[in-house]
Each structure stands twice: as C-alpha cells, then as structure tokens.
Image (cartoon, rainbow, N blue to C red; front, side):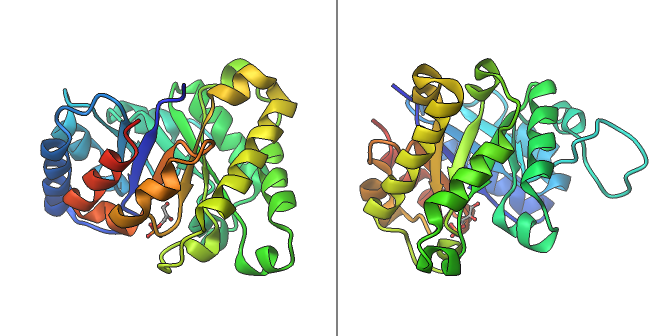
Amino acid sequence: MRRPIVAGNWKMHTDLASAVALAKAVRAELADESAVDVVLIPPFPFLAAVAEAVAGSPVGVGAQDCRAESAGAYTGDVSPPMIASTGAAFCVVGHSERREYHAETNAGCNAKIRALLAANLTPIYCVGERLDVREADGTLDLVETQVRAGLDGLSAAEAVKLVLAYEPVWAIGTGKVATPKQAQEVHAHIRSVLTDLFGADTADAVRVQYGGSVKADNARELLTRPDIDGALVGGASLRAFDFASIVRAVRP
Ligand code: 13P
C-alpha cells in the first residue's frame, strides 16, 4: 500500500510572519496525522522558519526548486545541500511555472533530481500537459517523455524514493479540475512507464500525486482513484483549514 502524500505549494505567496502563522495553523490542524505524509512548500526565504514551526510534528517541509550544483558562483540560486540544512526534506522539480517562466527542460530536471537524491532529499517531480497538447490527444505521449527523460539513468533503488506529481497545466490555478477519469488515465500510464523502466515492484511503490485546482470539496472523489496517491495543492494550501480538509479527505 502506498502512503498518501499531500503537499502545499505556496508558490510566491506569504511573507515571513504569515508563513510562520500558516505553518503553525496547519500544525495545529494536523497534530495527530498518522496516515498521510504532509508537506509544506514555502518560498525559499521562509524555509528554515517554517521548518522550525513544524519541528516535532507530522508535518514536513520542502522547497519549490533547486539548482543541480552543490555550491559555486551561481548568483540567486539555491542548492540541495542548502535546502537540506534548513530542515526541509523535499523539493519540487520541474513545476510547470518553472518550465514556462525559467525555460526548464526535462534534462535539467534530471540533473536536479540526481542532485536532490545525492543530498538525501525527496524530489517531487512535476509533469503535465498544456491544453493544446490535450486537445491534440498528445497527453500520454508528452507525459511519458517527461517521465522517461526526467528519470533517465536512475536505478530502481533511487526511483523508489521519488514522488511524481501529475499537474495538467490547464488545471493549475484555473478552477478547472481534471475529471477523476482523466487523472486516473494519466496516473495509470505513468505507472506503466515506471513498470517498464524499473519493474513492477518499484512502480507499485512510487507515489504519484495529482495537482491542479484541488480543493476540499473535490479532493475525495479525485484522490481516491487507484493510481492517485495524494495531491500537490496550490491555492487551497494557503488556508490551513482547507488544506487540512484535503489531507483528511485522502486518509485511507
Ligand atoms: P492550484 O491548486 O492553485 O491549481 O495549483 C496547483 C499547483 O500548481 C500546485 O503545484
């Protein structure tokens, strides 16, 4: 059985005080959570403070991006060891907003995933199609390409440590949710690609989240599909009660 994982991607929202307040409010809501992995993903400057605010609770912390190198002359960038030193244990890779606004490639994501694993961090690797691709019936092929290229060269022992997130771009921040059937179809395809790459045991163990306009009131019907193992939540993760309601909705 895969343990569900629900992560809140705060994107470029909050400031130091409101980030800490939100983290404490989530901690209070989910102080006894034992069935679902819960992760808060604040902006970089608030990572350490958020990690401190949830320390000793079931709530974990992750970063929104990283650079593949460990250190060097890369002004403005943040490395996996830096992220690990804040107490964070997760890092998003290849979010569609990074792919769009920072020209991130699948090969670049692959380098980041390797660097994160080397730093003992859990990558949350995002894949997903834009609306034009879905309308041209290219979703499964595109997602397959993203998965194969992003995980290129990984061993099964490494792959099992990953989390994947299927986020159809047209569903992000739009209020347009994939239907449970649409989401399950892509998740099942991702798992078949993982089976081809790493074997059935590994594919069975890797968690694949859904992301894109997940809310408290649609979480249960979406997230209880067989190959959907939780959610990567944007907007609704900025309100502690709503986010906690999504976590409660995916409890097995
Ligand atoms: P929304 O939940 O706001 O659609 O954002 C999804 C997302 O991009 C999470 O990474």
